[in-house]
Length: 87
Image (cartoon, rainbow, N blue to C red):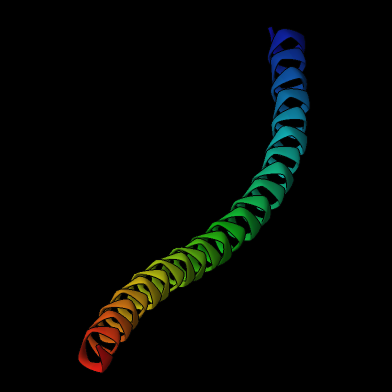
């Protein structure tokens, strides 16, 4: 009986060592995954910021084009009015 108990205790110690090794490995993987997640979140934040700037730039370009068209229309009307006044 004592031999069986020693064998069981020895097996439990072996399992404990295996578990500690597995735990260490998993904690290492967790740290790697957390680091990767942090880098990805940073990249996402940067990408969102760049996309916002691009969108705002595109909106500003569209507004400038509209302003140019408006000025062009006003200029054409002014030239037409001027030509009518010279007749």
